[in-house]
Image (cartoon, rainbow over all chains, first blue to last red; front, side):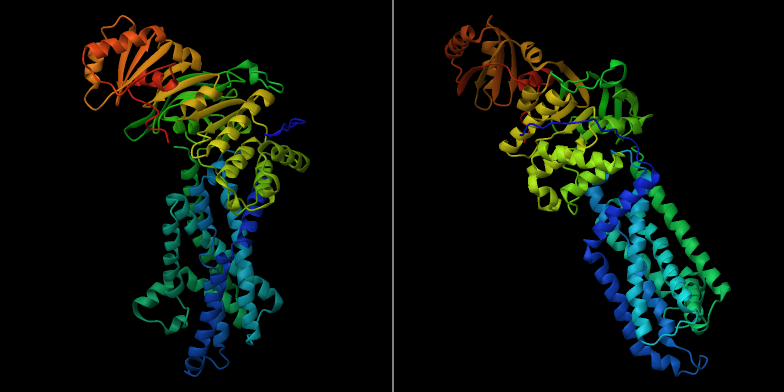
Length: 270
Length: 327
């Protein structure tokens, strides 16, 4: 070992909430970029479904006579593809690796604000989610979808999807922190199915009957899709947009409560 | 020790003080009422077999685990009620190198510095200093998942030192390392203590490690501190020499019956296929022991004279060998 000159003392101190948040976020963003498997499939699957669904159902639905003239099934399907792309995207898998490798303990040994350990990951998730929305939206525009609310509507549409994706991240984080088990986190995608399929993913609400109609009514994704579709197809329908935002807020309140409770449990030192 | 940059804890309190410290998991007391004091500038070796409670003790003293009862202060601050102040003053290298394989070594050290509120200038300087200390070289800019086990341990140690802690906890720092890497870690521990004045609390299951590094040793078994002192004092307490008779299965009781009658033998203990005799003057005692065994017709496979080890201390106190559990 070499002889080392250790100069002046440094003065460690709690860095503060925003510095901690920024530090944890930057690490999560850096690692997201180094983890192409985190966003490759998340992008490929919705693009695939978008193209296949339009190819299989567009002529049938638009020619059924059940919808007003000019009904654009591509615009109807675009929010579904976006929701498929962003729902369940999170760094919960890497959080489990941090738990298993002891790196979470290394972070907990510092004076870092505990909440920022989760907020930093969610910040990176939000950036990734927005990045996933853009190519799907671009494909839709290339296929000729007209956005009724213009450029502002496009920005709003992207933010809507981003906030929804963010609201959903709490569920996988809660599972990761409660279990520390990668299999459990991988299985969290099962939560996605009722949200994504018991809704108006393929047909409008008025075409649903029986138990499915009831399930669709109670599924927050129904209101989310409705708000996003209104921005694309009909213009600023604030009632629909408001219901969509309320649905996001409800899901976010539930999932974030679960995630931060799980974080408290993990760092409670008991 | 010669602390060139020794920093005393507030009011010259002990660097670590634990009082009746207990940690219970269900019905099991992993730590069952430990009292100890470690003075500033000391290397304290915490020795015990697997499952004795060493890591649980470290996790409590480093604020990762709340004690079930009892109190502990580290660097003058209570680990339960003043955990953030404790965290600013301690460095910790846990049993497994706690690293993030997808970051580079430099990114990891820089991130540690940021979380301790160090300025950019301080972080750059500390990374440079630590690079010299732990000899990682150009690999610092490679991703950690490409490092060898020894390099990971050294980087983990560097991460624990970014903020210049007063007290450093090393939980089994050499377990699983090859002899060369182990020697390098020992040299680093000595350097940190002697030249930087850092108080070191070191857990280990290796006797020679505690013997070589620690100013004082605490021996823990079944969650209790069963002996404490300098390695020399602990070994002296069981006699100046040890005669070990290696026996075949079932012969130990016969050997004990013969040698315990000898005036030269102070104490006899059985450890597996060995009978361990504590004696004052080994050179004078070994002949009477050999003669007595021969006259009694008791066959032994070997008779060895040596000075006591900490393993003999552990055997004397607990009735079991520490070394059997060690890797």
